[in-house]
Length: 479
Image (cartoon, rainbow, N blue to C red; front, side):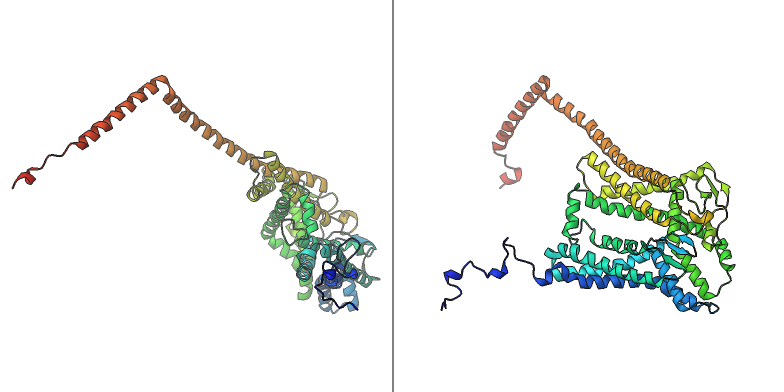
């Protein structure tokens, strides 16, 4: 029997056959396999869906409790809340033969935020568990499919709650509800300039220009800036017309619980009002019904539903041309986007790359806002209410033109300033060159030689003078 020690030459450089593969690559340990993240990801996705579902179902139950005269059971409130859950995920529902496809954008934002919190916690936990080296593979094949799968599973359960109810989604609404977790995972993982983001995300962005990761971040900030412009217009209009809004609210005659439900429903629509206001300052305006329009040129709202927040809509009127000054707001936002690109990046005189990066950042901001506006458009009934929102093509064209123009205006301003400074330096340079020409002329050289000779003789006299002994003072010669 061979009893040689493990350090003997016949054991050096060898390994058991079961630890390797034919390609020489050792398989990942079990704790680092992508499948190890699936259970936690499924659970996180399911809990995120339940959290978003509770946001709409709990107020529905409160409204049912606040209406004791109602003859329907509590499960009807759950069914209605589940239908609104799909509406808040960008899906359409059918209510009594009427299709409702207008997505409450603020409710969509709340859903995305809740899912984002769950996805961020899941990503941080899994990255710490598997390490940076295996994180990219685990995120792509474990975290993403698991989170989406858990969310999809609960979406199917919520769809069952709507069966036989007054607000039922279509079959395509179940997979369509994945819009929210996809956006949440995108906000968590698609961070190209973050070292903690998966390697496959950074690899995709590295295939483009070096400025693309930074422009991606600046573009999303620009989208937030544009939405802030619309939100400012909405708040200003609500402040100015608050008595009219309050008057319509008082006409409802509901108790405190019902008033709270009505207020929440209107609050969910304020996100849509932001896109309407942004389209107003961009020029095309918006429509609250077929045949109506509200733009800087005129307001023709027509007959509107008795919704308190719609009391802020302007009455029919023709506006003066000076109102088109509101178009300066998206242009100013474009200037700030261009300034953001200039502060984040240094192009070292490459004007073409500078202009391209600035235009891409502005267009990215516009694309995000237009996509959000498209989700906020839709129908809330039949006849005149089957088309509510913003005309997308005119809005996209006008907003892109204004924002890109503003961003490039900033670039042009900086280029003109640099050229002015360069010309100023060039005007100072000829005076120095003329001085050097005068110094190199024959007369100047002759004078310089004479001056040099005089300076050469002067030190000799000085040194000779310094060599003579100084006479003794009278005080020293006196005994």
